[in-house]
Length: 262
Image 1: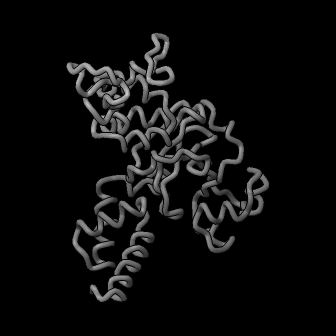
Image 2: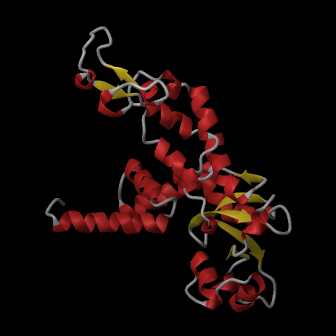
Image 3: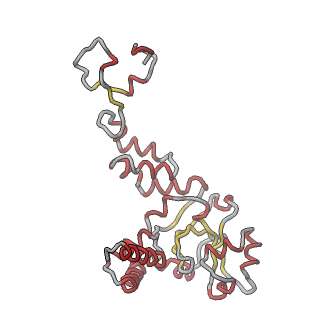
């Protein structure tokens, strides 16, 4: 569109707009009402074609996929596709594969380096300080990731999760999604020695099974004295962390009492 409302054949903008009333002619073009074609209306069918959307979304990072989910229902269904989200999660780190399905759907929404860790099987002589030196990380980072209050917590465990300081370790690697019972969080675990030990995987991944989920929910119901739906809600907003679910529930109850709602 040129200045003063004159049309310009080389200007691509008219392709993106459409007159609301194309049958009516008017000498005053500036007075005509136009709309912009977008996925929020029905004038641009290409933006609602699932095959086209897949081709576009497969090239987007995780953050942009999350934004695409908020545009409309069609975009949400395509951008939430498991294969697309998984590839976007893996792409920045050039991972070969991610094995397992997270308990919380929110797991895929952030693929920062802090979502990954190394599994270290504890042997005699290991200390938190020696492991920090071995993997070039901070002592406090190891303790924070493993939910440890003191260095002595290492002696009651069979393995520790080690934060990843060198992203190149993830290149062509395979990570296993696990809900660690000590760390109380879901992480994508890298095993430098190869595949995970079956015993350790069972201990760290027990809550991902249907039986494990049922036990967690039953425990929350007894602790919070609520129904099944309420327990599921607080567990979901706490990313599968039972302790955080109870803390959030207690905070909500306290607020209701202070507001005079309880």
